[in-house]
Length: 475
Ligand code: UDP
Image (cartoon, rainbow, N blue to C red; front, side):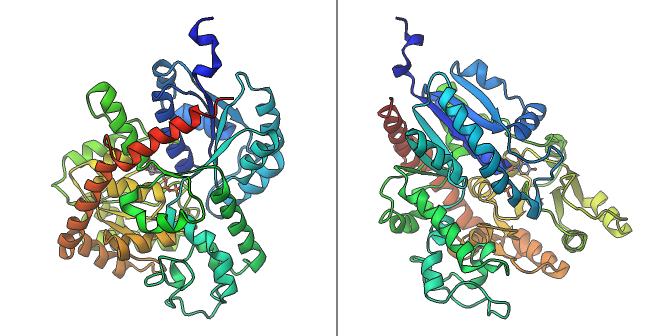
C-alpha cells in the first residue's frame, strides 16, 4: 500500500466557520497552517460565501500548494438576495440551525475519507451538536478574544448579582463586578452589545451564556489570541477549561511559518468576499510617513446616513489624510454629498470599496486606524503597531475597545458617541497630540506578538501541541 492509501498517515480535519468574513478569514488561516503541517484539510464554506470567495480571490493556490486541501460547500438556508448584514445578520443563526444542520449531518456521514476531527466555530452551536451525535471528536474555535468569551461566560453571575440586564435608565459608567479579572475597568457600556438590547430577556442572555459554556466544556478550545496579550484572563478561563490553545495572531503566525518554509516573508492574499481594490496602496505610497488614518468598519456594520456624515465631517475637518473603506452596501440611505466633503476628500482622502487590510496596516504611511473594533481588525492593527480610535458596532466589539484603550493603551475609545467634533479631536490626538504615548505601547505589543509566533514562542508551541493532539485522534 502506498502512502496515499493510508488514511492514518494524514488525519482528516474539517473546519466549518460561521459564514462571515472575519470567521472565514481567520479559520482559513488556521486551515492553511494545518495543511502546511501535512494534515488533510476540508474547509466547509456556505454556498453563498464560497461563490464570493472564488469570484474575488485566488482560492486555487492552496490546491497547488497542498495536495490534500479541499473546499466543500453547504447552504446557509437564507435566500440568495438576503443582505446578511447589520441587524439582519442574526437571521443566519436560525436558518442554519433549521436548514444547514440536517445537511451537515448527512454530509459528515457520507464524507470520504471519513473526518477524524472537526474544528467547529464556537459561535455555531449546531456543529458541536452534530459532531457529538455522530461521535466525531471536535475542537471549538472562537474567533473573538479570550476576554470576550470570558465576559459571555459570566452572564449568569451578572444576572444573579442584578448587574444584568441593562435597563433603559441605566448609568452606563457603573462598574461591573462579576467578570473575574475585569472588576476595576469594565463598565456597563463595555459589555457585549446584546446585553443592552431591550428585547434581551434573562432567558435569552442565559442562552448565550449556555452556548459559551459549551465552548469551554469542549475537549479543546482554540483561540486567535496570544498569552502575552490576554494571559491574565486566560488563567481565569483555564480554571474552567484546561485545554486552551492560543495560536494567534493567526495571520502573523501563518506568514511566519510560510517564511520558515520559503525563506521570505510574504503577505497572503486576503480571503476576501468583496473585490479588493489595490489602488489604495499606490495612493499610500505618495503620502508622508504615518500621516494617514485608515478607516474601516469591517464586513457586517451598516451605518445610518447621519452617522456616516458625522464621521465624514470629522475626518475632513481634522485636515488629516484618510483612507476609507466604503463598502458598496455600507450606507443604506443614499443621497447627495455636501460639497465641502467632496472637496476635502479630493484633497486629502481616498476611498475604496474593499482594501487589502493587512497590507494597508503594514504600510508606512498609516498613522492610525479608525475601527469598529472587530477582533480580526484589532489583532491586525496591533501586529502592525498602529494605534486605534475605536467605534465599536456590536457584539464583543464594545469589550475589545475597552481593552484597547484602558488595558493595552493602544488608542482611544469613542463608543456611544458619534459626533463630528469628537471625531476631529480624536483623529488629531491619535495622529499628533497624544501620538507618542500610543506609539510606544503599540510598538511594545507588536514586538510581543511577533515573539509568540516565532520558534519557541507560546503560539508556536501551542500550534504544534494542537497538531499533535489532532494526530493522536486519528480514528
Ligand atoms: N477586511 C479587509 N478589507 C477591508 C475591510 C476588512 O480585508 O477593506 C478584513 C479585515 O482584514 C479582517 C476582516 O475583514 O480580517 C474583518 O473582520 P473583523 O473581525 O475585524 O470584523 P467583522 O467584519 O467580523 O465585523
